Length: 481
Ligand code: TAP
Image 1 (cartoon, rainbow, N blue to C red):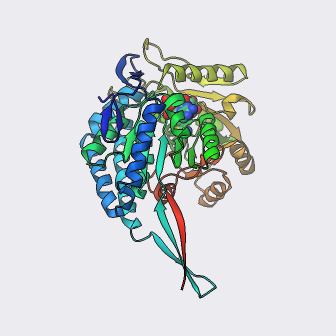
Image 2 (tube, helix red, strand yellow):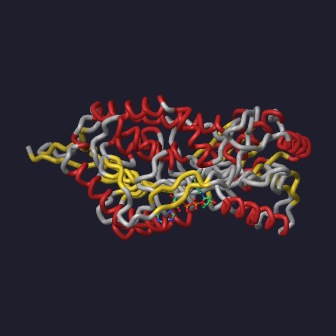
């Protein structure tokens, strides 16, 4: 397990010597002490990233040359997949098969952007047709500089990959701060990049508190772009900092995503996708479909099946065989989710199942998967992101009502619809005001497809070719002939 900061190709202790502890959420035991970076460390990292960008030639390499580093990182992740997945479980609490999938996906993300980096060599220039024949013009795409990336604790390694892979592919250099709660696999990523021979300063990874190290990154004048995934309030701070310095910014924030199930849907399949949509990763998923709307003729039948299946979910330490639901990430997150359930109950909601710590669990931040019915539309449980294994479910009568309820949110990250009628499903998909729409499923995520939100769920798109655009500038070069 690594513990130091990775700055300019070196493992170093924080300038001020600060540390923070890492706790296993399944046991509440401290498993590691890591560096707590301050503004001084951030400055060193940004200066290294600046030098790597401005002087050492990282952006001048061809895309194909950069791709070789990205593929070496992908191979390095895969070579240690099980070990890194285990570390992710110890740090975050998620079940091992989920962590294993995340790690494989992170490697796939580096491979995918290696492919785009190679293609970039033939796509950097575009001729522009001008009405005045005395001039010729072209648009040239160039890497935009030093990217400051700040990521959350729900997908520690995968979120690092979503930021680092496109940035490096585009020719940017990076200063990344993982969440204080879950920094261990980001440090392993630094070690893998180091082993892959990535030049010093191209990737810098600093652990520490958001309010200190994170704030120093967003405030640093020599950072050109901020890429953030996390909560709305911090996203807002980041946007304010970007506004002050006119930094480029991409934000992936929270959601309260709807899942509309029509009466012609297969009830068993719907129950399976609803559970996947809200209980995967303990519901700590920005795109979790946490508001389920079910057509009234099948509502009672579906609810009964959902409760029955939810009660069967095996809760436990993510390293134990067959566990489907691990602990929440931290004591604070556990307390917040429990408080949200209690507030829902006081607002008039019914707890159809769950709502409490599972029996027999003395240690660990465990919570039963929870289904809430009769949730008032103006209550926090219906309106606010809970970020835990808590789903609100309610009936609807008509397609129009379902669409209205689905879109009645200040968020617009994801939405799902289930129906055997393809025309209806496509119609509803088109009506959703959300950046990610699933038909007859919920949550499948592909590196190739754009990811991001409408409304308060964010700005910009990650993944796919859109993810690369986040790290490129466009320059016009016009010649008088
Ligand atoms: P945030 O506070 O938003 O944390 C996300 C990242 O931002 C972390 O790396 C955090 O560092 C950093 N950060 C915090 N304050 C900062 C600042 N002033 N300047 C720069 N960076 C800063 O999220 P959280 O506390 O982990 O979770 C709170 C709630 O946010 C959750 O309950 C959930 O509703 C939501 N959330 C959403 C997402 C997604 S994917 N949309 C992910 C996580 C959480 P530290 O970890 O060191 O504080």
